[in-house]
Image 1: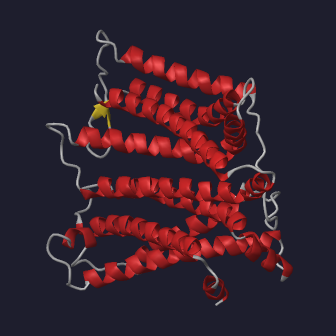
Image 2: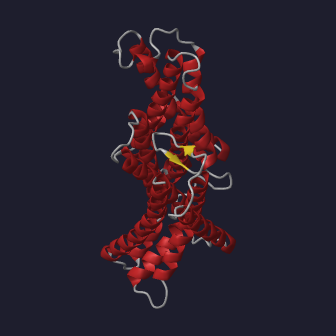
Image 3: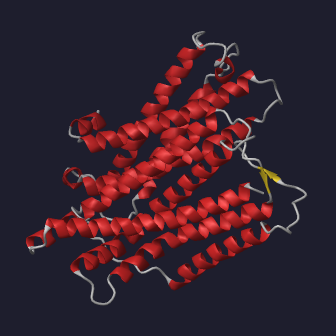
Length: 386
């Protein structure tokens, strides 16, 4: 009842966040229940059930990632609600538990809706094409669907609970965006991983390279590759992800070098200030979009084997969750910068200048996204071409 009272005061953005969380949880619950239905309908030993459950892990991780980003954005976007709860006696721990419970309830709502649809379709309503996916004609163990559906609110609530650090105050109206200096060792290690992984893959793709006698079979009908190519690609992708934050901060400092114009100075300082918060969502988005586009390119190639609807649905879910996480982080950054923008306007800054500085700042961030995502996609395409 407490959460229903909170919902009465929600704005469209807050309701949209909860609805997106519930929709993503509903889709993942459909993946889990489909794996259960296939395990019930297939003969013993025909297909390993653990492989079907492993297919659901990326989607489950995407829902947890979005829940964590939404939990971090909520106190910044709704400081008045957080301050009101604190004034009513809720301490930092209880506030975090309330946010976690809110997102866990959204995940539970989506999972329960999918479970009800699953049970209704099993009641001799689905056609012959869906019968194997639902396990029709086979008794359904009571504990199995409940256990699978319970995983979603647990993952969403846990991710939301640990998303906000215990040392970060939740009752501040505005959390300043401060420039973060990335350590030199981290930058060197990320650059070495990126360059080393790229050079290793290029060396393994040379025309004179011998084929791997024991190739690895990739899922989703992506063919085969070698362990060296897969390891080199993973190493380069990890390095590119770790380089995202330093690249954002480095480009921000380059914009403010010398005698910058007010537009360049505002864009550079702003980009340096948001580099730490934006780096992780941007790196995950670059990785997800690159992997999805590379897989689609392989699927539509002549002679490619059919993959079925599951990989496409999972790719759509992963892309949607990562895009929604980036949008939630952008909303959090915008709320944190609201005081700075108000101060600049009071000091005489024109809205046109602020808009042009924001346009330059996000253009540079887009270039970083294209660079890291393009490198990931190019190396992935090379790995699949062997």
